[in-house]
Image (cartoon, rainbow, N blue to C red; front, side):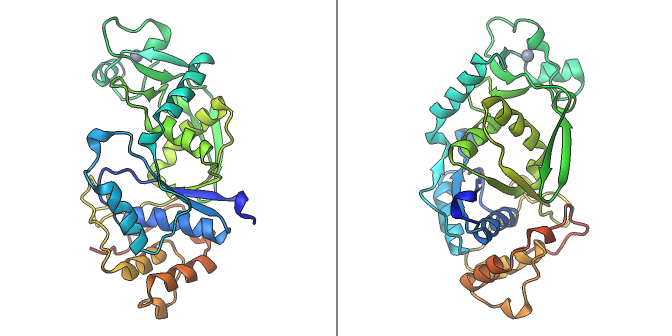
Length: 298
Ligand SMILES: [Zn+2]
């Protein structure tokens, strides 16, 4: 496959240090790209300065480098692209796909008993003298897509989540919109990422359809969990990757991705491990869900 046919990416947000779950997503997307002679881009999803951990962005490059990752082109930052997101928002507005919403989370909760939006401001004017969010009016009926690992998935956005936010009441652009615009402008053809984002995918596809962007090919890997079965994340206190011992963690990550690295590579350096993994990459070995939790490095 020619290089132009595959552009992948890894897109961490700078809310905390990279951990073993981040390594799995980075590694799976990297190996899949390189096994297809594709490009692999690094994008920092820094849309929310209030949640950003100071200094962590510079750290990402250092950590990924220590683990043997080589990204193509310069690192991109969502904070540099706000005008592009705003113009996509404007395009959707011109198509009458969006509407202003004054509802707080509390008001939605009181009306519906859930976080699911009930279309309140689609049917009537938002309250006066309130900050307004911008919502996307979604289609009802099944929206289906094929995932290389999870198979065919169908979602009814109206029933499952309702019209979703593109720009928050505090003015911040929502993740969904930024990701869709970035994937399009960067020519991303393949998205390989953690299953925690699987349910975000239909909303992104809805936006791609409305904006007339092609949808990338998706593959969602099972997420790593801690011994309590919680998803490894900054919120559940996942340990930061240790750059003094990258090989051990890479080896375990390859095992976790069901790539069966040979025992003799246990002590190999990162470049040897990565080369082996690219040559022997088998995306179809990754199961849709992890039956039992593999031991994870502490
Ligand atoms: Zn509303």
